[in-house]
Length: 111
Length: 111
Image 1 (cartoon, helix red, strand yellow):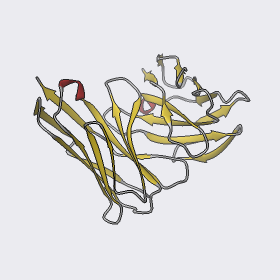
Image 2 (cartoon, chains in turn red, orange):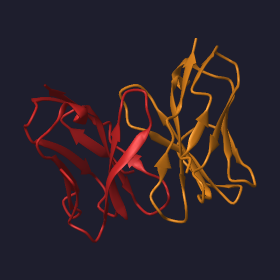
Image 3 (cartoon, chains in turn cyan, green):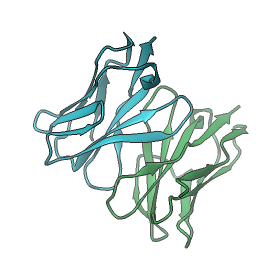
Image 4 (cartoon, chains in turn red, yellow):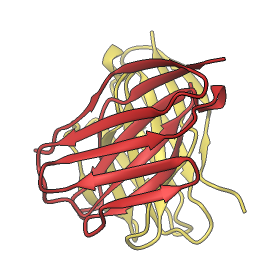
């Protein structure tokens, strides 16, 4: 059974600091990995999707890396802003249609 | 272009009752997945519907059932509600093996 762990559970940083969020998974036989953002009481917004054959993906200030063999992914957010405050979730898919999620990292960016 | 829409947004029920949640997929999507997200946890996969059939199921009891209609919309039914069923229920839609798009969810509270 795939287990996804996200560390830390919560993070508070001053505006402008870079954010580093970690995700680890126990079964390296994944099809892809996604990072999502969730605002309080809301649904999930996909930020980045990395296919198993890729090492990283970038979108604006966001960069996600994937090391499938070691079962790890890292999401970097450069020059954080108060609007980046949210919960960030990592999810892996083995290619059998379902996503397995971590519990998330709750980020607070202080102005 | 409307995204994934879910109704109702909030619902309060008592133990033992039954509930039906509804989901309309994003235009062009033919697959619907349901997830349960308890407070402070990541979403857990309930099941997925494709061509009006349940394609895959997570580790949830038979009290949880679903349906997909010819227009691809879907319902999630939960019978004999327990306090532990209190959660945010998320619907996600997709086309073939493309990334899933999530709705804002239905917040279900059991008294």
